[in-house]
Amino acid sequence: MQERQQQTEESGADAAQGLASEPTADAAAGTYQSAELLESMGLATGDPGQTDAAAGQAGDVASSGPNPTGPESAGGESGGATPAAPAASGGNTYTVVAGDYLYKIAIDQLGSGLLWRAIYQANRETIGRDPNKIEPGMVLTLPTLDDIITTNTTRSIVQAAFSIRWGVDVAREPGARNVEIDTFRRVHAQLLQLPKSHVEGTWRRLLYLNDSTGGYMSHDGEFGLGEDVAGAGNETFGTGGLFLDDDISAGATVFKLPATSLIGAGVAVTVGEGDDAEQVEIESVNGERTEFTVAPAFAKNHSAGDTVAATNNPLRGTPWLEAVVRHEIAHAIDGGVVDTSGFTTSLGDWHATSDFDTWAGRMGNPWATNDGSEISDTDKAQIKSAIDGLRTAPINASLKDSVAADHAINTYWDKDVPVIEAAKPMARNGGDYWQYSEEYYGTNNRFFTINDYYQEYHSFNSQVQFNQVRSYQTYSPAEFFAEIYSVYYEEAGTAEDVQLGKLVPVSAWKSWMDNNVASTGQSPADVQAAGGGGPSRGKSAGVSH
Image 1 (cartoon, rainbow, N blue to C red):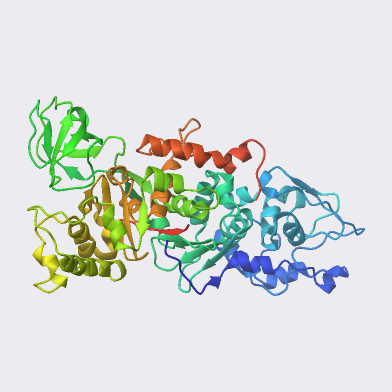
Image 2: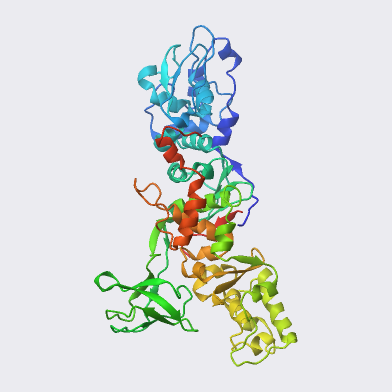
């Protein structure tokens, strides 16, 4: 949930909005110089078939040129026109009246004069070779904003259409590139697959971030999107990357792994691949989390090095850009459109606090030792102070080495004291602790972390730990919701009969999303298909951790 205050450099769509001005006095008087003006701005006056490079240049000039008047007004008697329905509903037409010209029509009907060229391209057969010559009575087909976004080849025009379609500004950080056409299209396509109430009016700006593969959604609705997200390819989702540490013979009921907290009791796993694969369910785990007892017994032989993966949460590559969009929209609706407390608190048993004793109390017996020795109040205070320092200042080093040799931390280092065991991976891995979720300490059916960004102690139930769609879901309650939301809608739009939430690994999580998230409204894509339409927070972790 990291918010950022950035200086921004406004780009095309914002400029286009500011150029929605009345025609010049000369134009109003009937002396039209639009063809010459467009030529002086580097714009073609009659040939929509110019090269893509020229079109791109023309669009950018149009968004920053001085007092553009657009193509020539229609001659004849003066008069007004009733505005068409919102362009996003599709299939609208507009009848030209006296005083019209394409730039004005684009402002009135599509929301930006920059889109005049899209109108011309859609009506070239009607208008003819010269876009300056439109006549009263001409019936023009208005392209939808969706069509402009998905088919136009001029970046600034696509940006203007995107900005109007979703009701957001588009800007970029100093040094960042302009948003590419393909990025606009991919973001747009993903937004169409999410419920309308989630994506319209819940955010206000798309800010392109310099040299970043992540994103964020600020509390005031700014969606920061890294300029390198689109080119980042796929990110790995699911639980896997585990390999048998020893051979298994048919009839065995135990398998061994290098120590890991990624799977545990109640989790179904698939051991092996292809014809050699079989599924078992973990019944219990030893204290070192290296030996896993299963049922039923293995029916096949397996070799050390064979894969072990969560059956209901398989490894897969997911396009990162679309995943980031879904993740950040989840933050945009968290606490507003959707009350997520029933998900995070009730189903995930998430608890966040700045109080050490409250956090430790959720461990059951936080000061227990493996030899039964008692820890004095003085030593407890010393241990507490050292661990509390991690909440505000990560050290990225061994907790043992960060204190004096005679410190109570070192006195009880090997005595399996729950609060010390929970703090060990937090100290070692610092602010990136979530990337090493297999090292988390768990007890009392919960796992425990320390988040220096929020300066909080966190805990959550074993179901959250053992069903990680990405390890980032263990970073905070809001990230848990955002990651599951992203997976819930991952396959939306991929097929007519796709079941939303099929990839969510826990049935109770899916049911909650069905009843509390998907029920908030159809996706805009569904609404459009039916003939309608119209125009706490957080950050996505970077790719490839």
